[in-house]
Length: 435
Image (cartoon, rainbow, N blue to C red; front, side, top):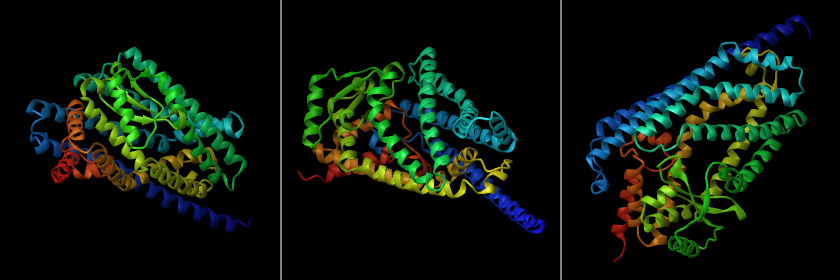
């Protein structure tokens, strides 16, 4: 190649690199700033209105409980904000301190083949990125959650859970990323399509295996002991036209006093799981109302719609990743000379994160619509909204929920409508019900 032509290409790449780097920094810092701003205005909004008991909670919440709700939300939000800022700072250090190209060089120096070398680099980056979050998890569990009477876990059990989770995550990520790197190496022109298929099948496999393989490693599951409640649940499921593999209770109380219930599994592993803390604190009709809401998600095909959306979105993201993975400015911007696809995967993950953040309001708006539809289904199935209203009030009180979230914070972070809004809406439906 003539020297003049080479120089022209080099100047062009340098120009693209500067523009790309400036755009990335602008979007990354904007996402970090907006996330911090949302937490700040949510706390200020709560400080301003947190002493007011909403009309729908007048008979359920007293002033002392409301004060605890406010304090719990403020402390949790401040910790969350600091954790996000810490994670963003670690990311910037990795990218701009020279650490990233140094790690790439060290992995290349090992003279391993493509897949092991890529797994080594991604594992190191995962450890460096994840380690600063451990103190925040410990503080949340053993300071904030203990202070407000939620956490019941011992330090020994926490460490055991952490190590188990780390081992399972490492194993699953090694399998998945190993397959991704293999496909990138073997099918350079179409790997994005094959990786999408692997992701989809991998997710289905995890959903199928989770209730019978992964979840029992952390909690004890046993058939629901309350036969009367079990018969009521099965009867309600039959009324909705659904069959379930089993109804189980989980020993959640040995870790936390938070309450919950959920559907899980696929095919023969499909089951209903109730926290023992929920069984201890809620009346039977409230538990049935919560489960009727969950049935609504299945009957309104919300899970299928989410799978279709996530499948489509992941296909688009993988195609864009394929187009960018071999683009030299992606690597030059962060000090890496040659095009190394497994290094590019980490960079693309970092780049996509702030972009996805700004798209969150679209996703949360759809999810909030799904929640309203599930509330409506519970009302239709039970013939009354009172049990679900009572359950939501109890859940809000028991979990010290924020009763006054800022609308902008809701826009970005709430997959469910605020509890005050949900209860008021259900009460209106009850009031309009024909006598």
